[in-house]
Image (cartoon, rainbow, N blue to C red; front, side):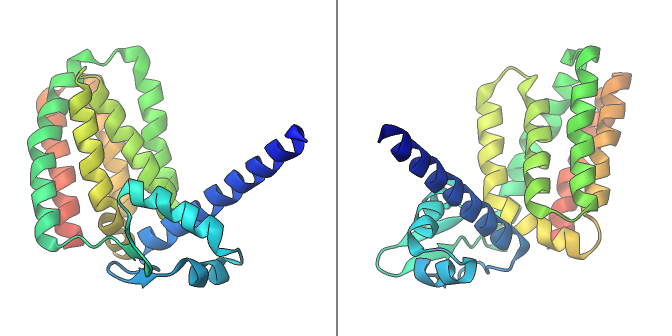
Length: 217
């Protein structure tokens, strides 16, 4: 009896994760538009499941800041204004380039292959146009670099800032064919790290963040 309950629970969790993945993809790609309200039953019909796993998956997305819950109405895709995007970019420019410059001499050479693998994953996901996988790979790369500063507050702050903008940053870059260019800058950044070039790493990171704002506006 316990075994059966456990199997049922696992199937339910798997369905919830599958629906959450589909919802994230639809939001990041723009298929589900910012500011639009969606009901769980309607989305359930769209994905061929009941409303229950949709509601459960949506609660995960609420915690991630991708949607907000509207009692008795459904869920609204988070809308971020152009002014908010600019403010968030300004904060990232104040934090990330300086931190990357500081960590260049702190990154052990034996860690470079792992970092290059993370950077290569962003290029690969950009090349196949998988926006959700790219968002996760891009986040992993940036946050891993910042961890070498030994300040978890920096990592947490940047993670939250990136979470608020990922809905709006990727689809415009992909439409303009610039997503792979942005991804390849991660490999170029590691070239500066390998040479111990703090100034080069700072300049590239600054341009990388600033250009993403320019290219999506």
